[in-house]
Amino acid sequence: MRKLISTNGLSNEEWLRYRKQGIGGSDAGAICGLNPYVSPMSVFYDKTNEEIETYDNESMRQGRDLEEYVACRFAEETGLKVRRSNAIYQNEKYPFMQANVDRLISGKNMGLECKTASAYNADKWVGDSVPAHYEIQCHHYMAVTGAEAWYLAVLIMGREFKYKRIDRDEELIRNLISIEKEFWEEHVLTGNMPDPDGSEISNEVINRYFPAAVKMSVPLPSYLNEQLKRREEIIHLAKKLEQEQNQIEQKIKLFMGEYEEAFNEHYKVSWSNVDTVRIDSKRLKEERPDLYRDFSKSSQSRRLTIKAA
Image (cartoon, rainbow, N blue to C red):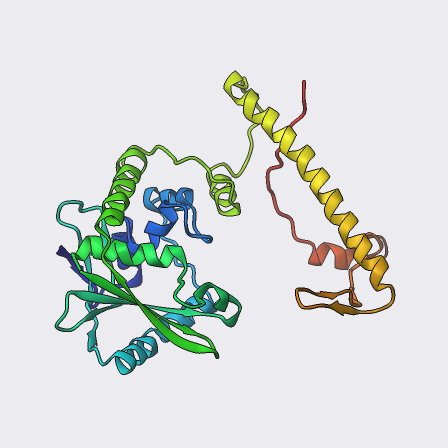
C-alpha cells in the first residue's frame, strides 16, 4: 500500500472529495450487493457526481464519538495496542482501492474496525456472526494494506461489547478485487450506471437523476416487453399472497375475539387497541382556508403508470 494523503488537518469536505477518487471500505459491501442501506447505484452516484454531500444524523454522530471507546475496550479485552493511522491509503497495483481505517494494531500486520449497533440489531451479531457488508469491509482493508488479519469490534448499546478476528482469505480478496475493478472501470470511469437492484435506495438515486418529466413521448423498445409481462405476473402473485396473508390474520382474529394477546412456545400474537388522530384536511380547507394555506406544503414527484395496450 501507499499513503494517498494524511488526514491530519484535512477538512471534512476535502476528505469527502478524496473518497470520490476511489472505492472505500464502506463502499465494498454495497458494490457486492450485501449492504442493506447502500446500493451499487448509490455508490456510482456518489463517485460520479460533483456534489459533496455532508449528510449527518445522531446515529452517525454517536458512531464517531464512540469509536475511541470501542478501540479502548478492544485493547483492554485483548491486550493488543492500537493506534490511529491518520491517513487514506491506496493499493499500489489497484489505486482505485482506498482505505481510511479506524485503527492499526501496533507491532502486527493487522487492523481494527470499530462499530456501534443498537439493541434492535443485536440479532445480527449473535454468536460468531457479523453483518456481511462489515466482513467485506474488513477484507477490503486487508486487500489495500496487505494485512494478514483484521479485527471487527462492536458495542451493542446497553447490551454488550464483542469482537471477532477475521483472517485473510486470498480467494475472497481476489474475487473482491475483480468485482471492484469491474465496477470502477466499467461503471465509474465510463459513466455507465449499474443495473438497479430493486431497492428503495436505487429508487432515490433514479429520482435524483430524473426529478421532473418533460411533456414528450419516447418509443418503448420491444426488449422491455418481457419484463413488463413479468411485472404483471408479479403483481397478480403479490395480490394472491396478500389475500392469503389476510385470510390467515382473519382466522387468528376470530380465534382471539376480545382477547388482546395469545401465545404458545413458538409465537406471541398481539391484537391491541391503537388510538389514531388525523387532521381532517377537507374540513380544515373549507372552514379555515387561511390555516390550510399557511401550513400546506407543496412537493413534486413522478408517478410511474403502466397499462396494457
